[in-house]
Length: 182
Image (tube, rainbow, N blue to C red; front, side, top):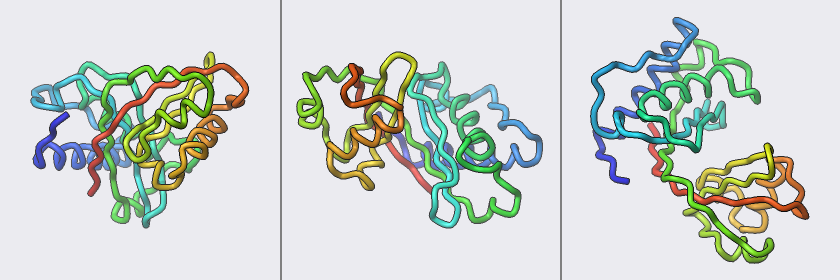
């Protein structure tokens, strides 16, 4: 996945504009019809918002949308106003808000034979991870390795987030991201 500096700047500007549009209109910024490059391509992303350096919202999807731009605008709006961990963003916070966009590669199955094998197959700092057991699912972006650098802790916290016991059968998928921030 190759993204030019101009495309990265556009992704960040559109995410921020979708948040601003949400403050003014209560909805995500509508996508302009004529988009090109990465914005017009299929893609999946997460948008993370930080207020004064602390996480303020993070919403994304692991499945690609037909046009990345549509998912980007929806995820930025949802991170600001619909992340259940936070109250909706207020207008006075906009100037102190920083934006991160994480573009995901396609999910790849990660077969494993027990937790020690899963730990051994992970690439700390590189892999994002999705775990699922039935309808329960959890996802960690690769940036979470900064907080949980040991594979055992990374997987353990993700299982806890998903509500999956480590004694249960579950599937794993890995992915990588390109991250941009303003």
